[in-house]
Image (tube, rainbow, N blue to C red; front, side, top):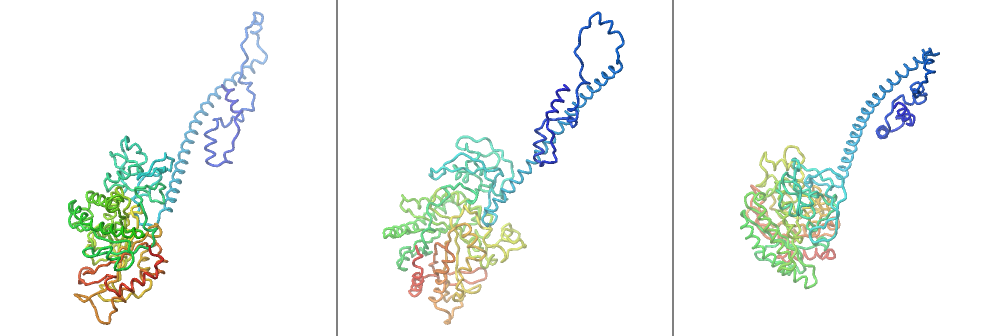
Length: 613
């Protein structure tokens, strides 16, 4: 045994650990044979003292001789004693070496685990930094995602919903952005089976005890069936190579040039009548779908009444297409005035809305028109009951988008706040009450109260993939609140300044690649009435409105803001108030009923004729 140990020691190279790195030391120490620290010294010594000769049989003649004292007997006994001591020492060193080997092995394992943890932490940090770099500059909602920090692995190709046969690689293991809405409970879902066999691909229903869904093959169903306060979100397009057909609008009005449009008083006006007054095609017309009471019956009645909008737009659409035009879009502005609409607009109402939109969109049906849905607009103002309640609003928007998109891809969702000038509009009736969660959500600069330093848009952004286009309402009411005086627009860049305010154009259009629709715009011409300050010295209606036409239909403006793809004039006269304590004013916003005003508009449009769709 001792000889074998010594031979092993002889064959082992001597390693100077001071010449290698920490990682190499671990590999070398863990993979090398365990040897005694003094083995290299013993290997140069002869083993003679520890070896005994073979036993031989003595003859009778030699037996007597063997009884004689041998020369050197004392020396022989001393050598034997030395051999015994060395043998015991060798056993001792074998035990020591074994113990040392066990300790060293344990240290190697511990060091290896520590290095592995450090590497994992670094990798996760790098992944997070890379992901942050890909994020567009958005408020925190946009990130509503949850998921693991596992690294990307290659997965089988799957077929996208919506009819596409193009194979894509699922990115289910891509790290998802953190969110405050992510459930903190441990995922203890039961094994998947049946149509949910692709459980490993799901980032959706992650509460315990529920079925999981394949994100790419049954994601629409997942979004419909998960409770809405769960984290049922997906990655932003900048991070997610999978583009789902069912979430992508079928066509893009942004590729068709600048669309002229109008918001009509449908009680006596029609798209065809507006086109005839203007003398040229307009291709987008806004109508309001309004519910005054909660429940499916009220919603059904409102949608049935809206059939007239789809019918009139379909007639003008066919007329323009038959004459070689590009067709008409119907913009529907959905408003819910029932008590607490952010709570009462429920799944039943949204499903009815989605079914009706799909019916109007169906190219093989009686209408076949494309639609822009302006869902509960101007949410950053306090003049509507759904306004200035960011968390509830964004949750309802995502819910509405998912239900409608699962039914039709020919409806575009338009996110359209009011201009941020004057935000947070504290004088309005639905301004949040003191101490409410909504009031705290408006305080983006965290100075303890909503004020002009807060972001007028970020709290209301529902997320990049839930918005197809962005819009804004832009009006000229005069120079100073509470308005009521007819005044010309003095700045040549007023519209540019309005869209640039709080970085709206750069943050929500340019950086996200979203087209802009000016969903409502007009210049207010005040007529004598209750509170207007009208005098003979005021500018004429034509001069006042033409000063606003010069802002909208301006080549320099459109060159600087190329993502503006549609402008819808507010073609209505109405009584309006600007909040509590202000009188109702008689305002004529219309552009085509006064012949001089219409001529001024036609002249401005002629200057940008090559830009129009």
